[in-house]
Length: 190
Ligand code: 5GP
Image (tube, rainbow, N blue to C red; front, side, top):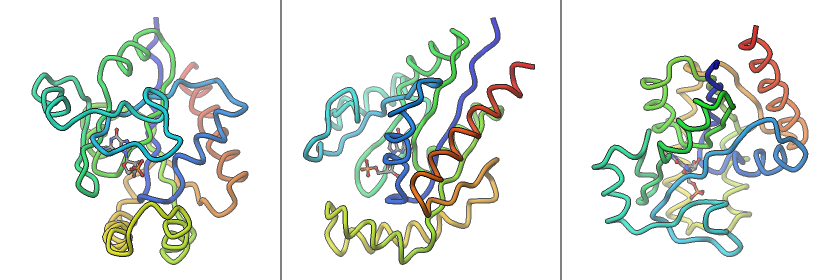
């Protein structure tokens, strides 16, 4: 059986990757989602096993040692990683899967899965990104400043990606992402 296709959605922190995916999955079930593992605390409303698998540092480090993550990164002081088992099982079954990960993680996936489809979600501007982070209200001004500085560096990575989607209007970004997924699915089945 043909392997499924691996899609990677990446972009600076706060650009809205999670929101775009949430809206995509509201009316589209053509792709599986890989739930990441993290050592950060859950935010209000986040659900274990849906938003993330929330684990302690020692459990995370054990997963790294056992090679149970296909990639991981330390983002703003917390670990985030993609559990290997679900991704590989899904691809072997011939089904497609999407990862929502940061840019360091995407670089690691590129080494392991060069045939994956890499999609960069771009904020309209750094000012817009700062506004979005302020609105979310989950970071202190200092933490926001670090995220913005990182975003500045991360924007320079855009050329490594197969597709760039501007997250200016949410509905449009969701539609474009769906189009990219459908396009690649059809292209690869040929
Ligand atoms: P947040 O704490 O806002 O949920 O996520 C912070 C950053 O970590 C976001 O840029 C998000 O895309 C990234 N992230 C989430 N899951 C993973 C993962 O499994 N691996 C990597 N490398 N980054 C992740």
